[in-house]
Image (cartoon, rainbow, N blue to C red; front, side, top):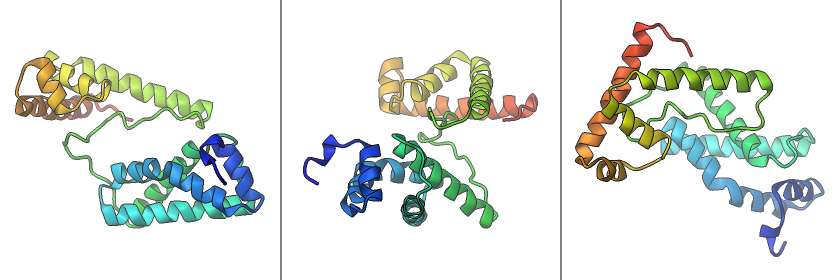
Length: 193
């Protein structure tokens, strides 16, 4: 399959379903980093990420071979959803729940746009985002500023420090206190997500 970048994901899926195994390899190469990165961002463990990534690939192959794939043109969101479900299954099976730690990787907005959601899920997602935005507005101005730069603008802490004319440690501290204060607001107001 020369010039494989010319083919869309849906074309590659069709080629694979017609017996061209190279098409699936191209799809996996194209999206490997995104799927692997998504899994790692959730579990934060290299070995577990590798296991769940392999499970994801296995489930993708099994679903495609069974002819049950119907996400025409939306291969990556579908693959991400498979990996997300496998992560949830892993934690349920092992009776573990992922704890959120204060770090520069923390994001209460781990909510990516996903066209594959149905209308009810999209409405629930919008309600959650609105709740988080209202909580953010209650933060002290300096904490709110750092949090918004980190989450919405996706700036590094070095960039935030430069933009706000403070040290990187001050920027990190403001983010840490923003998260602590958000948790306090959630607990005080008994906000459910």
